Image 1 (tube, rainbow, N blue to C red):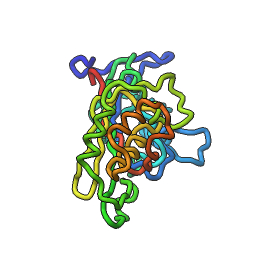
Image 2: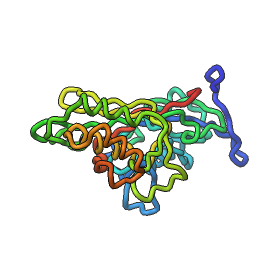
Image 3: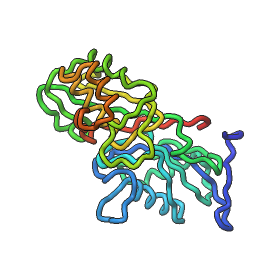
Image 4: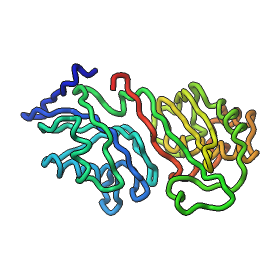
Length: 265
C-alpha cells in the first residue's frame, strides 16, 4: 500500500528505480492489440507507448500491462507499470507525457507502487463494456466504437438472461478455441444490459476473462435480444462447455476495457 504518497524504489542492477502504475486510455482502432509483437510491421499500443515513454524519460522503458486487449479493442482504464530512474514528480507525469504520446493514447493517472506489485497478478477485478449501435441504419461515426445491429433488441430479456452467467463457473463455452489459460473457471461479479440513447450497453465485471470471453458473451446476449436464445438455453450452453453452442464472437470495435481494480491502488 502507499505510505504518505512517497515513491517506492527498486534496485535494478546498480540503478535505483521507482515503480509507477499508469492508467492508460486509448483508441485501439489503429493497433493490432496491446501487446507488442516481434513483427514490427504490425503496430501495437504497447510498442507506441514504450517508444513515447523512452523518449520522455531518456532511457529504455519496458511496461507491463494488466490486460492484453485485442486488435481494435479500446480502453478507458488499462493499467501498466514501469520502472524508471527519474526525479519527475509522479503526479506530473501524465501531463508531461502528453506531447510525447500519439493522439490516440493518453495517460490519465500515475501513482507509486511497491516493488513487488504486479498489474496483472494483483488485479481484484476487471470491467469491460460492450456497445451495440441498435438502429435501423448504420452511423459511420460510430463504426469504430460499436457493433451495428438493426434488429430491435429486447433489453429486458438480455439483462434477465445475462444473470445466469453471474458467479463462479467454467466458461469454456465462452472461450475462443485454443485458449492458453490453465483453467477456464472464472467468476463474474456483475453483468448488466441497458439502453443508452441509440446504444445497447453490456457491462461485465469479473476476476478475469478468457480469450475473447467478453466478446462471445456479448454475441450470445445479442442473440438473446433477437429472441434466438432463452434463459434455459443459456444455462445449457454454460453447462455444456462447448464453444459451438454459444453465440458468435462479437466484433472487437464494440469492446472497451473500462476499469481494472486493485486492493490498495
